[in-house]
Image 1: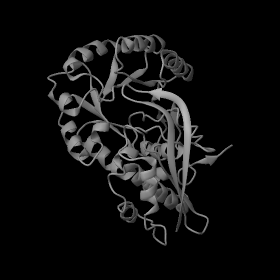
Image 2: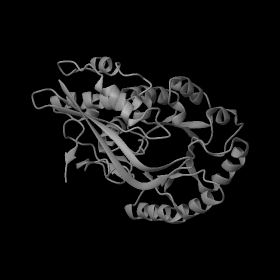
Image 3: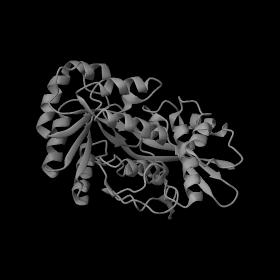
Length: 346
């Protein structure tokens, strides 16, 4: 088996949450060849400010993997190969696992989702409103209306009255959509109870990461459900998940495979969360189509909640001609093509 690494750098339309702004994205592509025409592909695209590693560090880790002579053909043997990579480099682990899984399923002539499920059904997709200005966000909301989006995600936590204005606008345009909010930990702990009460009028399905987990778990009561996301990252993520599953306020667990170290680990975490009666949502870190396709396969296999896999500013710049026509702006159709189901279109 031979490995090839490719690095992509791209400018993207400026986008932001309450804590970060992004104007560029980088990714590392891993291509694995079995020497007989079989190809596996993976993508590491760490996101500055959220991922613990850089694209350069992910590439270095992938370059040092001792790839086996023959492509592994079991989850256990794939895990042994991925285990060579430091757990503190989750996007590199995700890329290696994706490439190995896609090579294996390509050789078998089956789509990647068959690793975890015998049959799957179409899923709705949550559409995130992207932008760095009022005009951008309103335009994004209007596009969601035109697409007929049933599930919409809005980043909140900016200073001043911006959140109220934005949510008023969104609700006027999308009065019946499921509304997901994400604060990325930006809400002030002392103000959190009052902020939650103010947000209740917008009928959110849940609010992701309103504040540090210690603050969330110490609340006496909440007017609507909360969700945990990036608090699960890092070496003590399993501890954070345990605390989250014991917290009555948290009813949804958001899993990002590129932040948590891979699809297999997220499948395990999802099973643990569901066993505790929690909902599970799969999501991305604004990667390209390779990572998005891999996460979509796991989302199809798990079923349930609409994954956060809508289009985003980094998707086209990191595509380099690759696309997934089976992922529509508001839904995912189960692909029947082998492996990841990627197509090359220029």
